Length: 108
Image (tube, rainbow, N blue to C red; front, side):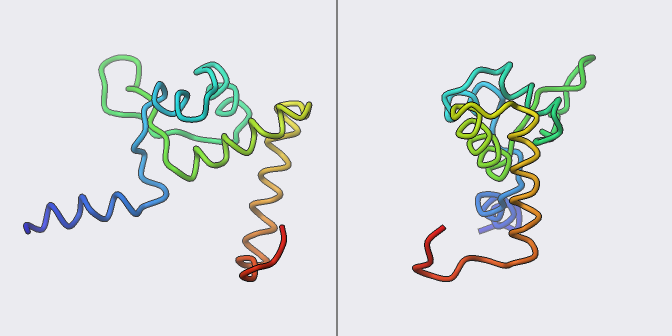
């Protein structure tokens, strides 16, 4: 297998690799494209941009961003305003950074 193929395989495991288009991301999360743009405007996700003419390219999302968007959708579906949901997720992420992964079998 060539060196290039090993690099491609690593992308499958990279949580931050921008692999999903906006349309595919919206379909996977069962949300609208404007919903994803609203999360970007609120600062929760920052999609990469593909190389493209004039408009800066198309948005591309990573698996980590899709998980954050899914969590936002859950909170918003429960009645939490978008800005508040984004702040909650940011705080949850900061807390997780400082506390480490949950113990196996622990309830969340």
